[in-house]
Image (tube, rainbow, N blue to C red; front, side, top):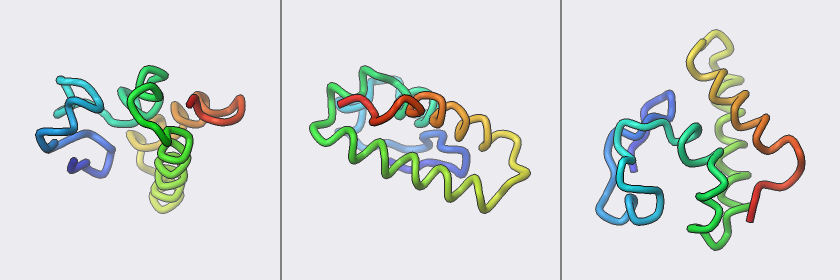
Length: 88
């Protein structure tokens, strides 16, 4: 997959829709996949993948503190995972 700077899916290969859903291109990966509990069922090492995604999102948000579109995504992911480990 190719994501833009706001984590919107720009391009996905043939396998990506089978993992993340048919309507992947044009959707925000954080909002529609990373924070979606149904995604946990499709990835064997979900906790590891979700933690890595959240860490990357945090680093990106730290580098651009005034990006009004990026920070709500960071807040969405933080709220989702606040209670402990990601699902999986």
